[in-house]
Image 1 (cartoon, rainbow, N blue to C red):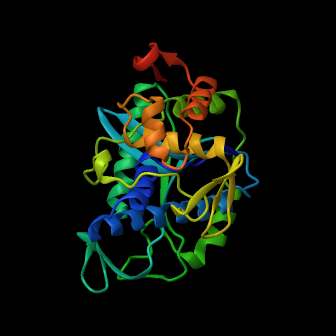
Image 2: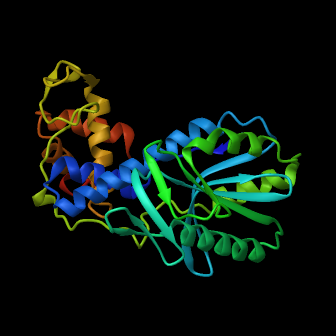
Length: 302
């Protein structure tokens, strides 16, 4: 059973917006692509675990803190007598492994996923100890991309390759498990401890509002070729239509995401959206969907 669904991280959301609104450097574009590809791989794995019939609780994308250290788990499955951490990797191409490093075939070294898994297991164990909870913890690294090959890896390592996914899921379904209220309380506790903000370790390009292209983007193709037609905005690139109200609210969310400390005002939103001529229309929308603070020219919305 899916107890906590997966959503895009704040980092990925910001990178998507920046990639649309400014010219990222090549390494920043690669980082954005890597984040997006990783998220797609996680969604691919979610489509498999949601079919598990075993009595278990699945918590996707947990960002937790233990011993003043943040750690993230792609998937955590609660069984009757164990917790199962699964790190999902959407690596593509040929890689080689040894205990000291994990690298691509042409020599570029990448972070060792086994070190990441062991770190998560250790920190989760510390967190459970602080809660006076005792569970055994297992873990696997799942490679979901069918174009992935790994050389020099011992068969006793906790790696699940694309060709092993079906048998791995069958194994998960046969783990003896009968959950009770204490398991649900644990799932609720861990979910309540999930950190929703931007991680202090997040790697973001430097940006200012003056560097960014303003305007409402198409919700489908991200084009700026948007015009207002009555109560809708229409994209001339792909033909996608969206209610003006929904498009403005979506654009406000982007503004808040990029600049959480800026005050949301009618003038600010009008300048950000560009294609909405009427400030009165924006003001009405803000008063309807947000709480107004201050009066007259000092008014802003939260």
